Amino acid sequence: MTSMIVAEELRKRYRGGHGTIALDGFRLDVPAGIVHGLLGPNGAGKTTAVRVLSTLLAFDSGRAEVAGADVTRQPGLVRERIALTGQYAAVDELLSGRQNLILFGRLHHLRPRDARRRADELLERFDLTGAAGRSAKDYSGGMRRRLDLAASLIRRPQVLFLDEPTSGLDPRSRNQVWAAVRKLVADGTTVLLTTQYLEEADQLAERISVVDAGRIVAEGTPDQLKSALGADRLEVVIRESDRLGDAAAVLARVAGGRPDIDPDQRRLRVPLTRDRVETLTAALRALQEAGITVADIGIHQPTLDEAFLHLTGRHTAATPVEAA
Image (cartoon, rainbow, N blue to C red; front, side, top):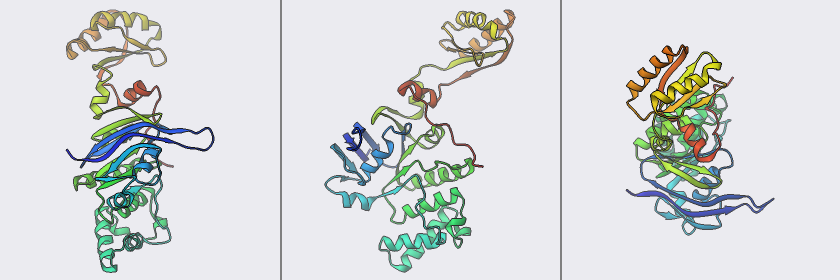
């Protein structure tokens, strides 16, 4: 499969202060036609990687190629083939949505008629036709992000860099942006998505690279990263905290493994090494026979949050909540 983004042993040190190392042997290979996620907390190196790959920031050593062009030797060619949408919408709030897109079209040297035609196409594509004549300052956060995405697509880029595109958005706006990104990929655009949000990476990315301290520490599909933690597990919540030890002994006998205990939540977790349904049924029966009251019981897969914590020792940001 053709690689649209290749990075080999990229290193970048910021010279000011203590000379912070932003990228430390960063490697990446992104095939065409997918969303590839860069997942990591603030300061992990995600934004620096995007700025390097999009020619906005020079790097100290290594090699990078985007859309078939070398980032160092052919930066102009790279810029012709890519688009970048940053963390904040870069639209003129005094102009209408349609005027913004026409302006971007003219800046990309489209003829006036072609700029107007392309603006109308993108307004329809991003469900902004009804708001085309309104000032961008009256748009919601989600509408501004969609307008920003539309502006990035004026020249139909081969690669689109999305740097935390839903930061600060409410759930409805976030879902609208996700739908727009899926349409882009369906039309053949390759997307490199940086995000702190586990749900966003899980929903959009076909493959995920986990970034920590300027390097890739793990890579795979969301399911592969979760499965790195091992098998599914049986989770039990009991009502009496003073029976946690008794419950652990029961689960160890039934499930054949040593349970992890969360005393604050009165929760026990034990890996499943036997038949799922039989183990759950036997555990529930054994707990009842021991006089232990079960508040909740179920079988769970490892989560992307747990995988990230296992790989880096840190949590990512929580899923954004609806804005007030």
